[in-house]
Image (cartoon, rainbow, N blue to C red; front, side, top):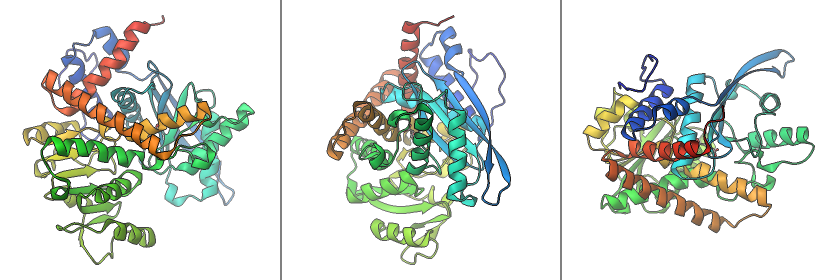
Length: 426
Ligand code: GLU
């Protein structure tokens, strides 16, 4: 979209997540009347690091992987965000995800900036020891840039509690003492937080509950479709079926299953754990990941990856409420179509913020050396997610905009205010 602020010409490609992020950012900045100087500061990341990572493969030869860490903003506190391992990682994707972390932490008002990391690799083709060596070398290269007060990584796509344990250990070896707060999403035994593994999916459910109530729907009559069976989708499916929602379709990377009368989620999850795919699950209709998005339902939760709802299929989306469990599942071009169709969108930077909110709790607990019961973690998570949802609703009403733009306005306002008061060190 044209912007009075834009001082360079960007070629807008619908499937470039950075462009999708910038379009919303520009729109919100205009509505907010953001000071043009602050706009210049906030539209770019603070620092982008590219690392070439030589790794001894198991057969003795060396592969050199390319990795990134983009530190988008530090105004509100240490940078915070995940690390993903995937063959299709690009710098623009990592840039977008880093910026989204800044806005996400600001929407839920936790004292972090935003960052994101990624390594271009295919973890499905690598052994555990190859992954360990790659992770440790990546960490060693970043040693001066990460830390509890600097930048605190966490898991994302294809990285796990184990990945965080290797990062924590490598960092601690260099520091000559154990530094648990350098990463979050660690195993509980290594000073991780109770509830962290479930927190993103739980947060998705908590904001969905608020939206469902706002729309006057009852859980039992609310059909839910979930794309993705990773950490977000699988936990959301489990918790939402326990809460009484009718989960009618789920999927994993290979495809999904659909039953208009509701699925038996525990049975499906046991099946997936055993068979690694829903393909031969006989008790429901098979469905592709793309067709699943167009199913009749009240709540649609894309919880897999970016660019799933685009200008090509947004018109066929049938849900009333779209809850973005993934980061960037909807392109900026699709936003307008969804708005025309009156779909209530709970944007990623609000909907999936439960993960980083619990990461904040983990970081706090590590720094105190005092650990909370799971009930306390979940109660505090609920407070933050429910309050943030209503804060975004208030912004949407006040500025007469949709939930996505409202959440950007809220986030940019918070980051801009702090930047203004701190001043620019020059
Ligand atoms: N990767 C997750 C996200 O995108 C978690 C980040 C974190 O906990 O720092 O929100």
